[in-house]
Image (tube, rainbow, N blue to C red):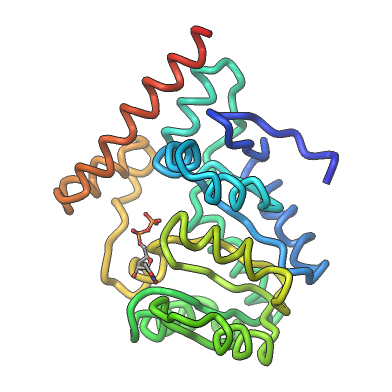
Length: 242
Ligand code: UDP
């Protein structure tokens, strides 16, 4: 699409859209039914793309790229090319599911450990009773073939691809041409959260942009990953002074 206004944050180009605009764009992609895919990079992924060309290509190939983390919003602001607003992947997905719920649309859940997607579906079904389940598959498969067959037989409107980043982005990039799906969305650990295996921060923390701190306090082993945020900001400052 040539009409995309995009903002470059250390090599990853983000669509500069509000949440409402991003939802509208996603629904329009879904209606084209060409297995377009959405990515929601956070600072960790932006850094990974600088070191992994295949990840960078998979992210660049997305039809919609929204800023998931507050770190990206700060980065874009520091670069003096601010983005309109943060579009958290899980909230964004919930907005799409709301629309599909009203339309009686269908959803395929791919990823996480065996059994997690089924439990996530129980939660989703309770919240979106009009939504239909097109199928589930865990994220620990060796061969794409049977997964593609299962998905294509169901031809879902939306597929949540939850293999963790950048694996899910690479998977969507590689398989999009072979998939009969309305739209795909890289959702990381969303199924774990929905199934109740991981928790989101209370709303106050989210609003304050402190979800990362909450998760760190809950899961101190995330510290290694979170140290990517300061590293990301250092790289932004370096890029700015060039
Ligand atoms: N995962 C998977 N297959 C794999 C590796 C990971 O399905 O080969 C799942 C894993 O079970 C977890 C998710 O991918 O549900 C990654 O969660 P994480 O919170 O690390 O993802 P992020 O949102 O940070 O990318």
